[in-house]
Image 1 (tube, each protein chain N blue to C red):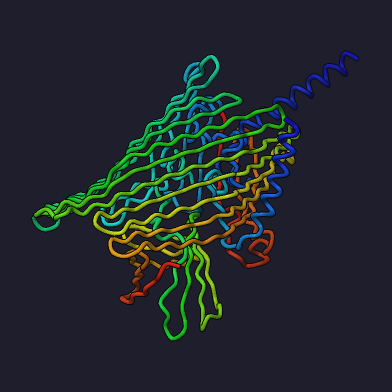
Image 2 (tube, chains in turn brown, yellow):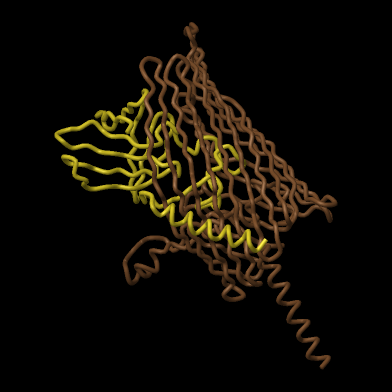
Amino acid sequence: MVTLRKSVLVSLMALLMMAASFNVASSTETRVGSMGGIGLYTHDNSNIFFFPGAIFTYSGQVVGELRSKGNDNDYSIGIHYPYGSYSVIGVYLNRPISLSIPSGIVNTVDLNQTTDIFYGTQLTNYDLGLKLSVGLDNAKQDVGADEDKESAFLFGLGGGLSNETMDLGLDLRFPSAKRDSAGTEWKWSGFGIGFNGRMFHGETTKLVPLVVFGYTSTSAETDTVPPATPPAKVDYRNFNLGIGVGINHQMNENNLLVMGLEVLGYNSFKTDIDGGDETTVTTVTMPGLYMGVESKVKNWLTGRLGAAQVYQGTKTKVNPQVGNDVESSSRSSQFNVSFGLGFTFGDFLIDAAINEGLFFDGPNFISGGVNPMANRLSVTYNF
Amino acid sequence: MKRIIVLLSAAFILALLFAGCGHLSGNDPLGVTGGGSNGYGSLGGSTGGGFEGGYDNRLLGGWQSETFGGDYYIIRFFSSGDFELQYYSDGVPGSSYEGSFHTYDGHLVLAYGDESDDYEYTISGSTAYLSYDGATIIWHRI
């Protein structure tokens, strides 16, 4: 009887340990991407860019994100290194950001990647996280007797508080770019602020209300010799708001279901040319639907399936310097299904977003197709 | 709590039906809070996203080319970074293309399959000018 109880206890402990390691280890951009893009509606190590306080939960990991085949610019690597008992230091290299410098400012430099440094520590009720992001690029070219100098710089600061039931994140960003050639200076700069918040309310079935907000204001100017009157100037304003509610249901230790309903997604981008047109493009998502399931098939194999559908309206308003306003609008619905697999090899976990064409067409020796097996990969090493 | 979840599930299903009524296009649904292949939404001004989405936002929406010999194109740019190009001959839809787009320093790149085209572009009010190999096509916002 004692032996039976002991074996039951050992089995239970092993099961719990397995479930715990499953929850912590199975987490990457590829994981939440292949579950329909539900990253904000569930816990995942890629959450740290939105909620820096979450990094303490994912201490002791090396994460490699291989976002598109053969494109090194889309690859990044990060380490979450535990420092003492209550702190973690994180470093991410080459993390892609989706930022385009307006046309006409620079020719050769860009701001496509950042280096991010995290610090996380455990407080009494919360985990605190801080983030510093830096992106830098510059170029210099001799053109006759003159120099053509270009530079681009991004500086960002972020912070957040996280625990099992709540995540908060706040960040500030300061992008800039400049070109100096033959006495003419082209420059672009501004600031951005973002806020993200979510809650997990409940036990095994959790209700997840969330809100995300972002505002960016930048200006581009050209200073010529002699100075133009008026000086060429363009203002850019970007406002984003997302309100959603989700269900995060841990059905049992091996199966997770996540559903997210974006009640309102609002994105407005305004371009105001000094002495010229003012163009405002507004995209409203209402609703956006995201869902994904994750199931541990074997100790070493996890299957994932996801879907997303958005119903969006886009409205454009052009206010020309001369003449009447022009408005146009369109509506569309977009849908996608995603499929992924996770493989565990010792302390390594490989997540793959599978190209479904492989199942339709068969492997190369049958179909002759050259499509890759996976669209993107993530590799996590737990130490 | 259980009632809230049941109601939310019902709302989710209703919303799914509602969303299914729209014109279905593209294959990269991207909202603000989710749907992206990186696991997240556009979050334009937020931490993990960017400032402009990697393209000139003034392009978003639909554009119709000037008619040449009864033929014309309609192109739509979506916030997900996808585009849809439809050819019309005397008002009858012909071939169509889908893919992704991005802009850099006055250039518009349309990528479909393994190929991509790089156009120089300018926008003036509700008119866009796309130049390729010395030829310029004029587009009007629709």
